[in-house]
Length: 113
Length: 111
Image 1 (tube, each protein chain N blue to C red):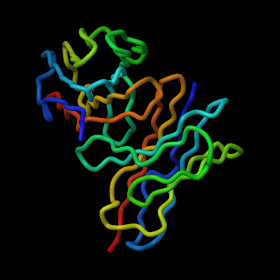
Image 2: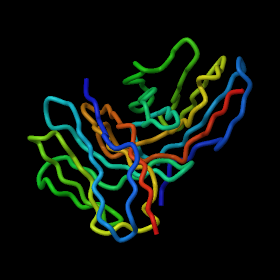
Image 3: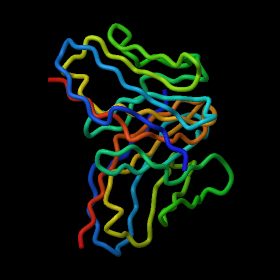
Image 4: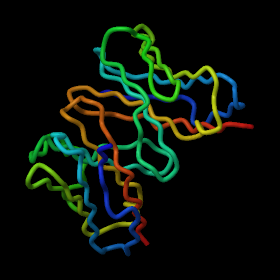
């Protein structure tokens, strides 16, 4: 069964350091999402791609976060510099098209110390 | 802006008992509605979805949900809960390709 792959599963980093997460969506899925999930809350959309284009990054803290999906396939989310408040689960999801059901990866648990 | 409210932060039920998890959404038209389940440290798995048509939808693992337009609700139900259903459940609304999630309901199942 096709899955959304994310790496690493866990990451511990010191504040002010740079950190990056990788996501490989299900093959053929045009839409890719990055969500941040703080403990005890639901996922919050950070950025949404349609193929290689960003269609929504309204909630992305652009002073420190960046995301790219250069060839419209896999994607990288970067944080530089990391802050203590960035500790959360970062979830990647993909769907065939906008509005379709999303399939989630297992997430990357980030701890900033 | 669309929003999703899950009024119950935590629910405890006995194994074999029935379950209903509440979800209310705020949006002018009928959005796409979803229920997801998340086990600790894992990603989200889709239980069921509503796009249009029959307002009672069946999902995986014996779950169902009913869309009630007049109440702006999409409550999740299961007639008999199993211990393996213990997890966190999220309701989500999607409109124009943008999804909004509720803050989740944690389900504990007593033996």
